[in-house]
Amino acid sequence: MTQQTKLTVQALQWTGEALKVLDQRQLPETIIFDDYRDAAGVTDAIATMRVRGAPAIGIAAAYGVALSVIQHTAEDPVHWQQKVAADIDMLAKSRPTAVNLFWALEQMKTLLDRPLASPVEAFIECAEKIHADDISANTKMGELGADLLADVKGVMTHCNTGALATGGYGTALGVIRSAYQRRPINVYAGETRPWLQGARLTVWELAQDGIPVTLLADSAAAWLMKSGAIDWVIVGADRIAANGDTANKIGTYSLAVLAKQHGVKVMVVAPTTTIDWSIDNGDRIEIEQRNQNELLPACFIKEGSLVSAWNPVFDVTPAELISAIVTERGVVLNPAEQGIRGLKDVI
Ligand code: MRU
Image (cartoon, rainbow, N blue to C red; front, side, top):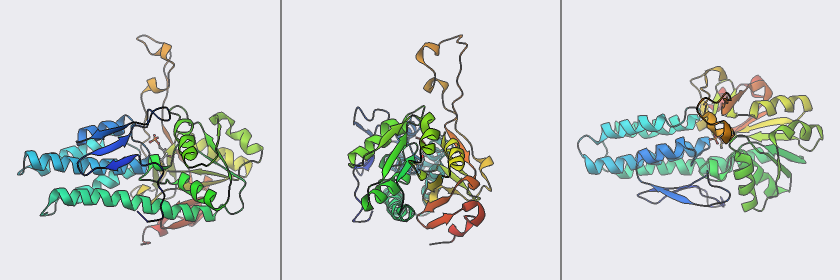
């Protein structure tokens, strides 16, 4: 973490023996942290969205592995590696779309094969580095993204991509934070149905930082663009394919299609840990389907109900609808034309 990075909200806090998680299901009404002391607890916190957002999921999972090592080296000093490997498999099943989860687990897994004098210290150190590197990446992306916003009047964001969704500061919201520090801009946040990450989390986070924000229903986005109030839609990502196709919160694709119609630009902001170099395009990204009861009105949640719900929680925006991908390694303008492979080898 750089000295300058100001973290208003820290949703994930490592105490040395437990992971403190700000329960995002209860925001903004209630601010409550729960302590997790084993990988099963962290898996449940991710699956139930107490912790959410691609980078935060990866960081929480890394600490989950560290907790597993603390537990199993104490319980079974001889066979602890097998137990930790089983916990890693369990954590990997918590959510399917955010590639940061699998990336972070891979980093932790490499330690399992190494002879370690102090396994507990080594695993904790690795998780803390994943956390700190994410904050540094966010700070860097904030500055790079803000450079693209020199003349803008207004921007719209979707979902929550801030400190709550990352190690701290944020991806798309980090860019908005950095841009606002340079000069006030009008910030609009879509509600982000059905889980209301925008209405509950983004507006709360911005208000914590003293940044004014205007909330709108997702269905009002076209009309907002038509009014000329915004120049950019700025979003995060859960997985970016090697051609720049980007999976993000359901509704991102709709915004990108609307943006094209209205001459509004689309910026995707994500650390390179969100890029899945193993897939050529977005068709191979698994889209999480969540329980229909997250969407259904309570009166239809009953045996024999004739009303069901379709609840995909991510969609894929084709690279050709994206004007810029901002990473900590640099910015790719018009990724469909430029390609993003160049980011792979940048240190
Ligand atoms: O279902 P969620 O709330 O975990 O989805 C989060 C998003 O889609 C974010 O936009 C994405 O993870 C980027 S967060 C920096």
